[in-house]
Picture (cartoon, rainbow, N blue to C red):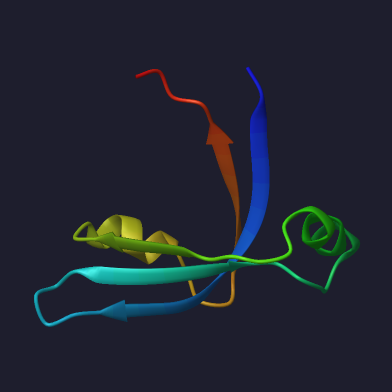
Length: 75
């Protein structure tokens, strides 16, 4: 099974009045040589996540980068 790996940075995290969280990530574009390599293959886009799980939201910190792995799921 083929996996696709991307590297994204949290650019925005907000908490709403109903205690849910919204997190926006964009692909890395520069900085390290690794980031430049990821940018070569993932030049644009964004991921928008919403959660009511505070523990999960606390793991995603603005300005920090995260690997995102895409693996085909069985239907």
